Structures are given as C-alpha cells and as structure tokens.
Amino acid sequence: MSGSVFNQGFPSQSREDGPGDTGLQGVAAEMAELKRISSDKSRRIQSITGQVKILALNALIEAARAGEAGRGFSVVAQEVRAIGAEVETISRSLEVELSDRIAAVQSKVETLSESSRKDRLIDLALNAVELIDRNLYERTCDVRWWATDAAVVACAADPAPERIAHATERMSVILGAYTVYLDLWLCGMDGRVIAHGRPDRYGDVIGRDVSDEPWFRKAAGLPDGDAYVAADVARQPRLGGAQVATYCASIRDGGAGRAQPVGVLAVHFDWEPQARAIVEGVRVAPEDRERTRVLLVDAQRRVLAASDRRGLLTEILAFEPGSRASGAAYEAVSGALTAFHRTPGYETYAGLGWYGVIVQKAMR
Image (tube, rainbow, N blue to C red; front, side, top):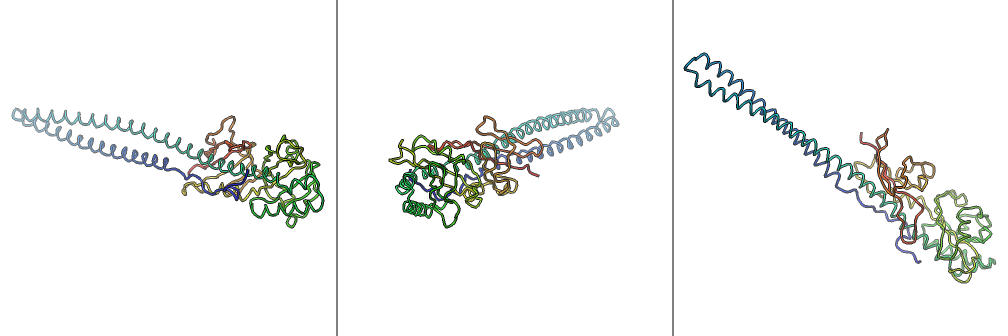
C-alpha cells in the first residue's frame, strides 16, 4: 500500500479540448458559403434568361413587322424564347434542389456538431473525476499503511506519555513528506484524540471527543485492517475551518488482519487547493473559457470544487442525473449546457458517487 506519484497532489493536466467541433463548424461555414454561391449563380442565370426572353420577344415583334420576309427569323426567335424558358425552369429547379440538399446537410452537420460538443464535455467531466479517483485511491492506501506503523500501534494500545511523544514525532515526519495532508489524528476506541502530527499548528486537538463524527463511527466498526472509510468533504473546525477529505483505518494490535482494534487513524487531506488544481486545469478552448464552469460535486450534487471558486460546499446544482452514469442536457431558460459523468472508481476505491460536471453557458 505504498504511495505513488499521486501522493503529492493531483496531476494538473487534463485531456485537451478536441478539434472535432471546430472542424464541423468549418464544414457548416463552407456549406453556407456554397449555398450563397449557388443562389447567386442561379439568380444570375435567371437574369440572363430573362434578357434572352426579352430579346426573343423583340425579335418576334420585328419579324412580324417584316411580314413574309421575317417569317424564318420568327421561327428562330420562337426557338430562342423556348430555350430561354427551359433554361429558366432548370435554373429555378436547380436552386430549389440545391437549397434543399444544402439545408439537409447543414442540419446534419449541426446535429453532429452538437453531439460532438456534448461528447467532448462529457469526456472532460470524466477526465476530471477520474483524476480525483486515482488520487483518492492513494489516500486510502496511505491511511491503511500508516495505521500499521509500529509507533502508531504501540501508542493506541498503551497511550503512555513516551509512546504519545514517539507517535507524535512519527506522524510529524510523515506530514513533512506528504504535504497534501493537514494533520493525522490517532484516536482511541472511545473517540478521544490521543496524538496528532501537528500540535504546534493545531493546539486544541488532543483530548477532543470525535466519537460523534460519522467517519469515526464508521471506522470503529471496520471488519479488518484492509477496510477503510472515505468521508465526504467537510470543513473541520479543529483545523482552522479548512475543507478536508477525511480517510480512516482501524489500528489493530497484532497485525492488520482481524486482530483486535485498539484505535482509529484519521488522515485529513487538504482538499481545497488540490481539487482546485483539477478543475482549473481542465483544458477548455480559450474562446469558451469565460462561459465554462468546471465542477466536482458529491452524490447530493453539492459543489465540492469549482473553477470559478463559487458555491463551495454550499451550492446544490440543479441537474438531475437520475440513474444515468453520464449525459448532457440544455437548461430550458438560460440555454446553458450541463455535461456530467459519475465517478467510475479506481482499483479498490469505489468512490462516493461524485460527479465531474461541465456547465457551459450559451454563446451570446
């Protein structure tokens, strides 16, 4: 359960906004130009045939004046007039047919472009939540690993002053190497904090009763040392009100397996700066950046992280995923497009039902 390259925070790169939609927009523009050209040329042909018909009419008039001598010329004028009418009919038919076909192609291109846009935003939402999953899987590995540390186990089994001092020193060393954590708390089975890694920074943690915390209650009932608790993001008053994601494992005297639990180790992950690196690192096209909001939300659609830094832990998004793992839909009033993807989990970390979400306002 040793750490990996993810231990020092989230990777900052996401898949870049793809070129598909831009290409389809280019095709749509070319089709619009083709429609304009065909209409212009068709009207030009109709103008010329109109002139031909007028010339033919004048020729017929002159042929009539010429009497018998102009009869042959009259036949030619009639033929010219008939050809002009036929060319005009073909021109009008061509304009209508081309216009209909071009309109059909334009409609298909718009549909493909819209589908491509939705798929791209769903992919970006998945990419964001996948990075979270991989990173938080490492957090579950860390807490289970550190719960077996000899100094931590000895202190939980017998919290004598010298053992508390040793465990405190050991956890301080861990925090110095793993800077994505705010603190590590060693708790007795009664829910009291026995030792922690940063007594110099957080001076009122020792002796605090955390037995009412949901993460402690779940951790106290874990079946073995391979199990863990992953809590939703919350503000922790004892850590300066910081946003933390708390991970817990049971401390067992005599090995990780099913030995008797003697305590709980809780590690408090420094959520806000790490999550911000994810949502602000998603590569939205520059022209769309101002109208695009990248978010991570929990199973209740509460905002956990946002690229605009608004609504953290207070805002509830309006989208309704239902049973769908992913999707995209327009908001009826504003026209904003919301794309989402539910956490797929990673390795032994199943996730907490969180979503990656992209909200993109309509273009003005």
